[in-house]
Length: 445
Image 1 (cartoon, rainbow, N blue to C red):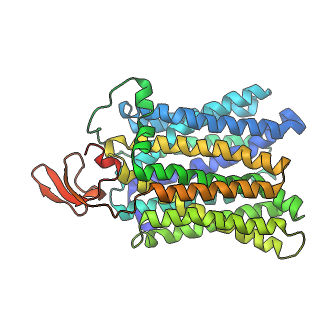
Image 2 (cartoon, rainbow, N blue to C red):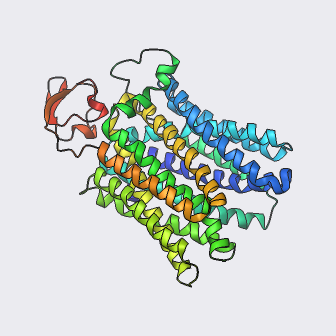
């Protein structure tokens, strides 16, 4: 898997991603402590509102960036986003009012909503070979999971030596290093859309979403996003409740439960590059989604059990299974979007995925917390489990199996070496091959 890091451009971009993730993790810990200093016992409310603002910024800003991304240099866009994030992190230690926290969090997450989809759209151009791109997706999944484990540990170690305000400077350094690494490489020139976009700002901002709703497997991805959001919300929101209240374990063991979730995700991310060489994305992603309600059923049995020392290892296994199933869905997502979106529309497609997936989390996070707190954990398990089952079945129904009748057709808008042309024959200025027309590359047929 690490052979893909021999590509200098990708190596610098991946390193930028990792450093920025660590900086973000440090800021998350510091922000919690800052909220407590400002609001005291109301810190939970402050953080909950900040999380809602974060998701709202993701949902609103990413499509707007997708509307103008084709008119902006991608490197300048990513560097500008990093500089904005660094500036906001530099101001956070000096705030003393709750509203100031909210404004800065909105600016910080808006910049992230500009950086992340652009970064995701660049990688397929940097690594056009399918095998290399798959390895890059697995490395990205590993980076997210390792950040969830490493950043809190690093923050705890640093807090034994310095005050939390200094953690924000670590965040600033991370974003500045990310910007420097992006500047250090020359990005491939993006492919222009085969047909220039028409319409006003709204039409351009919704182009990616309209691509999702018009392409069968991307419609299925919307349902898969909801299934993953329901499972991850259960883990993120209610881990502390399960560990501390339901099982009576120590606070330190909350991190072990979250680590089990990350461990399950990392194991799958390591295995998938080989698996995807012989198994289709559809098979892996749908099986991952359908595994989630099975795990919820097991969690329901664990929740109903009143006593027993077996419940703690069972919870760790359950959380690891959640992580593995979510990774089965999330890791190949980039491959699916890459194959389904025309090259000139990739940034819009990734921006739409970023926005629509976070819309699902914006729904499931408060649902998991509200149900767990007011109706009990078992009610939360049942409700979120039903959501994963329904979403998984909808995804199966929406995603074509690939058994439709093939149609012979020609491409003139894809570059040489594009993974979609692996079995095509060059004919004049285009490439001709035959298969079912069920993705965004064939919207004009």
